[in-house]
Length: 528
Image (cartoon, rainbow, N blue to C red; front, side, top):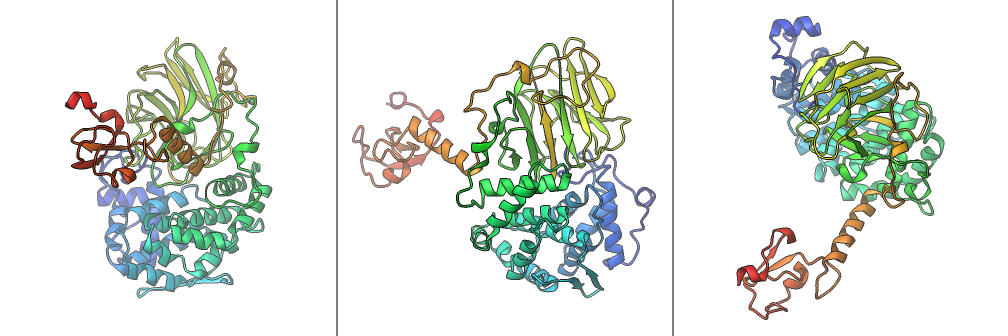
């Protein structure tokens, strides 16, 4: 279960809060050290958070209360920048969670933040002063990474006029300055993501585009795409995704046009995901940079036999990876994914849990780290499921309910998580010591089905398909999406309908025009 509301297994009493997290909330409220402690407590608590219907931990409640006033909100942001260590695998995710849970900042608060940060291309030392204290530090990789994450989360949360206010010329130059292979890879990655989030606002998108970002991304893609270094790999992947989806570069082909998918017969189903999940052109990598809990299934399912696949982790945060059916319910904004209903089963290596039916049980594997290989085996004849971490195997009874055609390999991702799937197109790293089948040797996909289109091309294709199947009988450019009342004929688009006084089919006087779904409309004969 994803962490959508910052919930924990049990409500935390003050005494248990002090014991579990080693802090005392009675220290000077709102002070720098106090707020730093609360942010670090939240970072530790994140590894214990699982259920969505429990009370939030004390540290989150206090931080939310502090952030209700502008000065307190600025102190929370400041602690996110200065206190979170670079090496913590959940650092970026906890910043996203904290800022998402805080009250929405005002325009004045955003302007004050921009003024205090005073970012620029030549910035060497970050000075952040508030009424309660003064902080300054050299621009270490930790501070640069955290700054980029804060900007990304705020740009995502404030998409629109406030995002434009936040993207000052200095902030833009600061982020662009980080887009070089000489920079620490984690800083590059999160600077790319910040610029992506800012580009959700059209005015910012034009500003960023005109800054020459595409050429910088092309260089990062060339140098780091497919790198064995996990953070460089992620930065290369995100550079490629931005070039395909947001900032095109002249004469650069789309990645799907040159991706070699000839030996791939099973992919992650790009037509079965929300726009928040990024799928690679090969269909074998998935990444989530949204604040929601995003899920995906593969394109092949099984109902009998013994099957196995592997996942290589590029990040070590909250993911639930396992098996699901078509009936599995994925509620991304509520935090429900693989393992959170009776039709799915999942392994969680960050919180060291196994999930089924939205309930979790602990396992003995140590927390996963980037580079670990998770093996997943399902034995539908014996009713068993096995999870192996680098060859160390856990076997459990498989209790998920079979529905529809069978079980799919599937996974759910919290913010800033990324992994690579192997369904058998490549040799397995840790094959099980029992006879098994792999998906890739038993599936087939057409060339058309293997194409993972960029988001805007996918939407355009869907729109054209809709229009081709049911075009407006007047303009033949738009879909026939409008019902004319009272005759209930539906053969025109709204643009043309607004120019008509009488129905073009029956010549009845039009009293109303309703934008409607064709499948829900009665036929004219039914209403005559």
